Image (cartoon, rainbow, N blue to C red; front, top):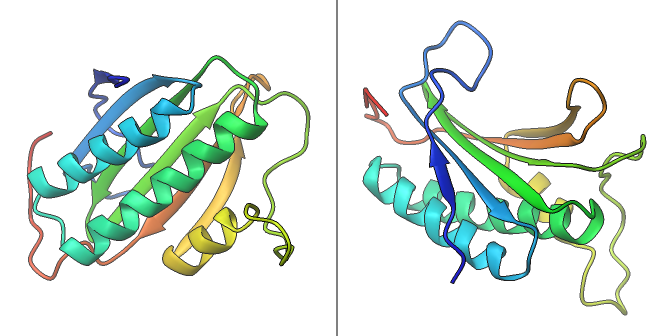
Length: 157
């Protein structure tokens, strides 16, 4: 099994809300990393006391975003970030994609087994999008899920 490498930044989500919980982990761009990302996210959601239905959605979202980054960005690793601020959970996957083509939701081909990942992200997330990494060395695909729970008030990291 692939193990993520960890670090804890002070604030991952721009804006006025402080990060109540955050984690960053880096995984190799390999198929086994999708499972490692799902496991890591599930563990964090449980540790942080995130509502189970939101945690389940977060696991699906990270799975789709990491799968897309590995399949389409052709980099050697992905960086995953999770941050809870207020009632919002931000999920980010950064890759080393070159060029200007950003991920876009397309109508799925009924004859293919793939091509539904971003439609799933769109259905589960309050909002999602793509941000270019400064200097053009990749992109960050992010998704916001909320509410994390009716009484989430976590502090620390």
